[in-house]
Amino acid sequence: MRQIASRENAHFKALKKLCRSGRERRKTGQVLLDGMHLIEVCVQHSVQLQELLVSESGLLRNEIAAYLASSDTSNLLTVLTDALFAELATVETPSGIMAIIMQPLAVHTLNHEIDAVLLDGIQDPGNLGSILRSAAASGFRQVLLASDCAQAWSPKTLRAGMGAHFRLDLHEGCDLQAFLGAYRGQAVVTALDTPTTLYSLDLSKPVAWVFGSEGQGVRPEVAESTPFRVRIPMPGESESLNVAAAAAICLFETVRQRR
Image (cartoon, one colour):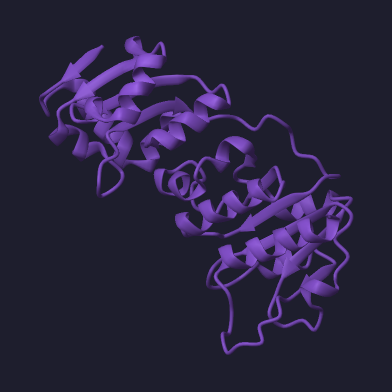
């Protein structure tokens, strides 16, 4: 076990850089998990922890104390003063525990014959995490992200995903047009300017759902790669839906039809 009580500690400085910089996390390939829930899901999926960071007050919390007592992690443990831990925390109210892991790789390679979720320019980490959570909950495992999406493994996206990341095959920096060109199922893009409604579509066979950015939607060149455009009926006065809400509706309509 390591203890840190000074801001001048070299390891603390490295941890602070890792917690605050997405560029640093990409460079090292490391991922920061904030909170007991994400750590437990990570361990359930046999992802190896590199380091556990716990605040002094966190050691006294029942859930954290029970986890540390039941796991063989003493050699991974770094205990920080509450003040130092708060400087690392990614949330306003520190959880008391964080973990560092190497970014997991997708278990399966891209498959052009099974269900998929394609994300084009989803910039908001909260929306991205919510979509990943809906994908995992609805049984979609394969998720492709274009290079202009928010970082899938950022702390904010992880918090919104609530552990969904570890149940998915996430492929970042994908050429969505190339994938759609080779896809053998039914590719569908959501749009506002089409007469075809979601509920008139047959979703019994493999489908690749394509969702676009919060402001601009799916890029025209990507949308042109899909033969189907559908809209979600909105009898109310709203002009559009949040992309995470739209994705959830489409993914669970797929589930409903297949039941």
